[in-house]
Amino acid sequence: MQASLQPNLTARTQYEVPLDRTVPHLLPEAPHFAQMPQVLATGYLVGLVEWACMQSLDGHLDEGERTLGVHVDLSHEAPTPPGQSLIIDVELTKVEGRILTFGITARDEAAVVCRGTHQRAVISLEKFDAVLWGNAAAFYQLPNGLGKPSAMPDS
Image (cartoon, rainbow, N blue to C red; front, side, top):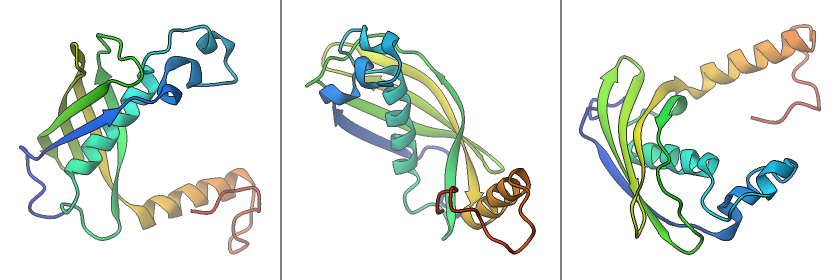
């Protein structure tokens, strides 16, 4: 982590909601979602919040570092229909070791849509991959050195 990774970092992300980010499109295999109104899905809203938080960290992480979402505490207070712009403001409020806490507010043209907090953990991508593939090898009962099975995705 760079020394510049300190509280008060901010980012603003503007996103025009397309039809395919509405509730009926969230999980096409789940018929319950297909019956819902065409407004921004909470699942996509969480992804947009994560994206805004990641953008605020640009230039503040060391080479090979990434962040992973580890906690989400967000309201979803108002519907946003397709075609409207959503503005997401994030502020890094706390740095505790490798855990970063962000304050979140999102609004569209009509109302506050979302507010809350989100935490991300700074990780070494190399170490994370080693643990991930080590666990996968144990699951698949691979002897050391055989590599990952062809059914496992590339990193």
